[in-house]
Image (cartoon, rainbow, N blue to C red; front, side, top):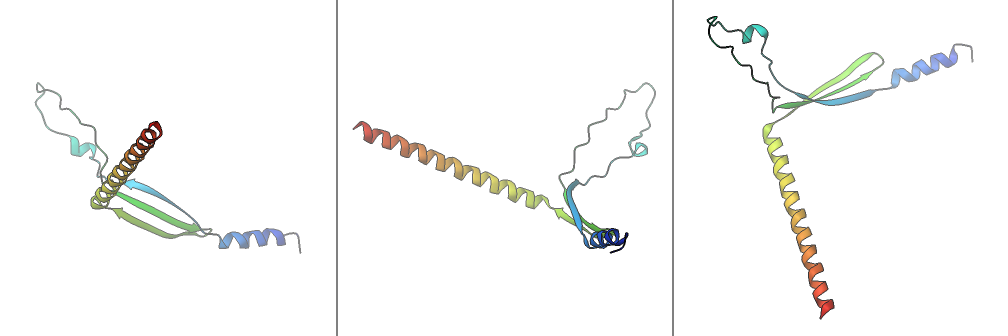
Amino acid sequence: MGPGGDHRARNKLLEHLITGDETWLHLSTPETKSDSMTWKHPSSPVTKKFKVQQSATKVMATVFWDSRGMILLDILLKRREDEKEEEEDKEEEEQEEEQEEEEEVQKEGGEEKEEED
């Protein structure tokens, strides 16, 4: 192989590699400075600005690319209903775990009483 052969083989390999990444993004429409301006009398009190909370709506952005650029951009919307279902599922799981722990404690307590008798 010539002096540039190894370099070309490496470049050829890189042409076939595809990679990707994903991240959750919060959706919000920030208020611009001009939107937040209000007319007021010089003697009137200063208006208070409140801290903006992050939106409950989120999207999952997934991107795949290769050496030539982006191949795919996928946006998955996470709806509030999905979040509520997830929270309910977590609560149910926690309740089941607590119930199992209580049953184990009761069994252990029963075994200790039998040993005493």
